[in-house]
Structure formats: structure tokens, C-alpha cells
Length: 591
Image (cartoon, rainbow, N blue to C red; front, side):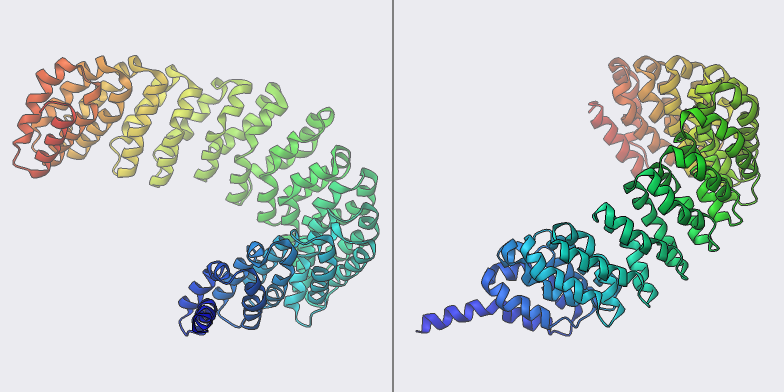
């Protein structure tokens, strides 16, 4: 008898501990106990989890938002712990309560978990347990439950009976016409995914009228979400149906009085273009796109400008060139001189992509003047966006036509007062080097690269050092021997010790790519000469450099030249110098 009581007490222990912890004043303790729910459920077993733990959780959903959020997340993974799909419906009551709370993130997480466990219901259980939950939420007194209901229609609809589907469509229609803007907004946000699971005939008769109503809503936050639904619906309908049922509303949205709605149209324009197909694009979307490029709001123009390349690429080949030249290019020319830098920057990021579409002659005659204008733009970001996309133009017309106007823009960026601008242009230098070719680079840009090595900002000097490595990899060791190494060697005698340290940093990266012979004969003597520098920082950097380039030095020179210098540095009065010299001796096997 006593043994039986002990067993009973042991089985009650997990739930008792949970109750104590969930009633504790410490929020963190309550949160930790929720995160351990799966362990407690395993200890209880599936029957007691269903009969005791789940009802207890359902009755105690009055807590801090972070605790409720953790609970909503945990319950979405509880199906195996309650006995599998056969019993998954017992998880609905606590999740239903969580889907009605005031905090949005908790409701959203509860809806996510409900969507997840919906898939684990059988068709019969959906009708018996899940659909009644959706209906209760859809007619709830508080807007919170009705907003949550909007996210559940699409996941359960496909497996329901014809009669139940009709009921759900009726409930969704009511939500689309709800008095509360937040509910209409939630319905508009889920209309697109719901449209994908509804039969085509009901899409036309039921959902399209809902879409038109939402697209004319008094709240712009509802109308802009209807634009997203438009993308899904246009992709589901035949072209004639799209033209008749969707396009009138889309035309209105493109000219909506709210800039936020027009911005959403511009932002989703390529998806809309893909959904409606080439014919409607030609007849309708070209004019709409022109309007967006000329919009009075800079945000809308910027969003549309960023889509110029993709829109033009997706045009039907037979009309592509004529549409660009007569409809798009005039708008682009205006945007190049737009008063808003975000618009110009967005355009600069994509305008070069028009070159391959239009070909060499049109690029030279029409696009090149625009590129050159942008290269001289007062906004550094515009200039950088053009420079970073030069390879598109290079493939079409060759770099020579650009080089004369390109160089002044590069020099200006390279000497910009803002160090971040100088840093950005350094990162593009290897790309430019490959495009311009070695001769042009030596003549015009090589000097710039060496100037950055003595910049007063450390980040610039460091980036310039890494830039040298990429240039040597691109142009080869012979180029480095003629154009880079003499300048690096000259830096070793610079009066500023920071420049001498930069010299060593350059040798560290260039030595690895120049090859053993160049490193031994040209770079090593420079490093060894700096071993007697009167600045300790330089001396211990000499030791570090010898450690780094050691594997790239001929063995004979390591023993005959390097070993003696490192041993002398190992006796240096400065402890840091001694430490790094000792490390270098060991690393190079000279001990």
C-alpha cells in the first residue's frame, strides 16, 4: 500500500513542480518552466499530458507576454507528446485562447502553431474540431480573435466538404467587410494565399469581389495589402479574366491617392508583370510603370527606378527595344537628374543593365551620356553604384569609351573627405583593374593605390594593403616587381614610422603571391634592413613579417640571413620584440 502511494506521489511530482513554478513571482522562472514543457510531458506520458497538463495550461493563460509566446511556440511541437495526430485536437483549446490575447506577437505565434497542427488533423477531425475553432475566432467579440482567424482559412480549406467550404467563404467575406480596420487588414494580408486554395469558379464569384472591396477601402494600410493579393490572383486567372476582373483595380492602385499604396505597386511590379503576362504588360503595365517613374513622391520613384532593368528584361523581345526607347528611356533621363539622392542611387544600381538589352549603338548614343552624368553626380553612392556595375557596359561597348570620363570620377572618389567613401572605392579597384587592363591601370590608377597606403586613416591603409595583394594576383609577379615593389621598398625609408609599418604589412600580403624568388631577392633585404629601426613597434613587426614570409623564403637565405637577424632581435631590450623574434625563430625552424 505504501509503495503504491509513493508511486502515485512520484507521478504527480512533475505537474506539481510545474504548478509551483508557473505561480512563482519570478518571470524568468515561469519562462524556464514553459520551455521545459516537453520534458514534463514526457515524464507524465501521453494520457496524463492530455488529461492534466493541457487543461492546466488552458486554464492558466494569464501571464507575461514572453511566457505566453514561449507557450504558443511549444504547443506547435506537442503532437507526439499527446499521442500523435489522432489526439492532436486536444491542443486546440490552449492555442485558441492564445490566439485571442492582446499582444500581436503571441497571437501570431499561436496562429503559426495552429497552422502547423492543422496539417496533422485528419479530414474528419478538421470538420469536427478545427473548423468550429476557426468559426468561433471569426465571430469573436474582440478584434484580436477575428484577426487571428484570417490566417487559418487557407490551411484547412482544401480538405473540407463542399458545404463547409461554402461556410468558410462566407465567414471570410464577413471578415473582409469587418468594421475594424485591423481585421480588414489581416484579411487583405491573407487574401492572396487563400485565393491559391479556393476553386477558380469561387475565386471569380466570391474572392474577386472581396479583393475589389478591400482595394477601395478607406484605410490605405488595407489597400496596400490588397496589392499583394493582386499578384496571387492575377497568376491564377486566365488572361481575359485578369484583364476584366483584376486590371481595373490594379490601374486604380497605381494611381492611388496614398503614396504608400503606389509604393507597394512599384515594389511588387516585377511580380505583377510576371503574373499578368506579356500582352497585358504591353497594353497596361508600361503606362503604369511610366507613371510610377514620374511619381511626385521620391519613395515611389526610388522603388520604381530599382525595377527598371528587370522590367525591361521581362518585356516581350519583339517590342523590347521600342518600348524602352520610346517609353522608359525618357523617364530614366529625368531620373538621372532627380532631386532625391535615393532615387538616383536606386537607378544607378540598375541602369547599366540596360546596355546588354539595347546593344552597342543605343548604349553609345543614349545610355553613355547618362552613365557619364552619373559618374559626375555629387552623391558618392550614385558614383559608386555606376562603377560597381561597369562590367555590364564593358561587355557591350568596351571600356575605352568610358575611360576618359571614368578616371576623373574615380580620382574624386579616391580623394573624398569621407574615409568610408575612399574605403568603398578601394574595394572596387581590383574589379576596375580587370576591366581597364594593365596598361591603363599603370598609367592612371597605380599612383592612387600607392597613395592610399599612406592615408591618415588606418582602415584605408589596411584595405589598400589587401588591395595590393589582389592586384598582384591579377597582374602577376613581374608586374609587381616593376610597379609595386620599388614603391614598397621606398616606404621602408619613410620618416613616419606608421608608413614603415604599412610597408611591412604590404610585404606580408605581397610576399605570399610574388613567389619564392622575388620574395627572397627583393623583399627580404628590405625587411632585414628595418630590423635595426629605432622604433620598437617597427622592430617587432619585422619579427612578425619574418615569421609570415618565412615559408616563402629560400632555405639557404633563412639560415644565412634571417637567423642572425632574429637572434639579434631575440636579445632586444623590448619584451614584445623578444617575444615575436622567439616565435619567428621557432616557426621557421631556426632554433
